[in-house]
Length: 280
Image 1 (spheres, helix red, strand yellow):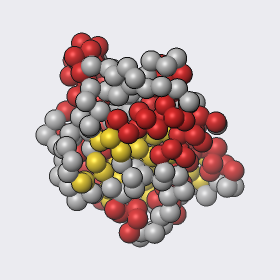
Image 2 (spheres, one colour; image 1 turned 30 degrees about the vertical axis):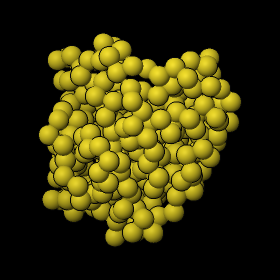
Image 3 (tube, helix red, strand yellow; image 1 turned 45 degrees about the horizontal axis):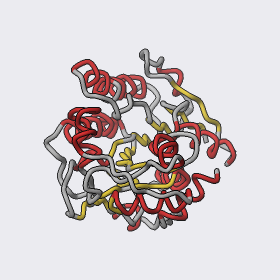
Image 4 (cartoon, helix red, strand yellow; image 1 turned 120 degrees about the vertical axis):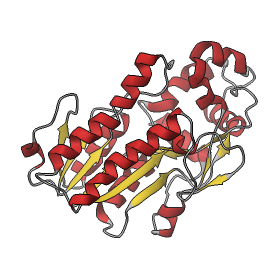
């Protein structure tokens, strides 16, 4: 199978490209920084759209515009090219930020979006991708949680302070974290490509969300370090401004669609997933 990937040089894109090639597929990397020529997608049976500006930054007006354009405008450009060479399936990334901060509420793919910046951005991002259904493409929009793997992602930013013994919970630590091991995320994307009956939103998270306090304890244990210095909420607000709400809020998300479709998570235990990610 020939698979085109946008964002192929990123944390998830690199792992997905490696896995697909190991399975015998042909993989091409496509940049969305400029309008991709339609012929790039000729002969592609699947397209995976992973492109997007990092959200973890202070949300200035310019940053908001970059974050939005890297998702909305780039997906629109992608679909303009795909119209001439439509693949069988488009897997276009979204995020659990779709749901906003909802306390202890258990969230499934049927839960409504949040009205905040990330919620509305994720909603528009998915709507842009699902426009490909108009020309016969099956569309899957994985709402991705915190991805745990070696060499990038959120974990890479956490390891240094924890290894130095100065890691700790964020704020109260009671906010929920919906996470997924990188290997399981790659497998879920492959599953979405292969399963012809699989479409629409899918929560790309492990079945066992945890609180930030529990995550902190598991990470400290995996590193054999203490976790005794919590990061106060006011410090995060000073550092990140409005974006701090992403760290201090949370989502208790369940992968209902994936489980109902028969997908098997191999790293559903947080401690095991962290140990594997740290060991490489």
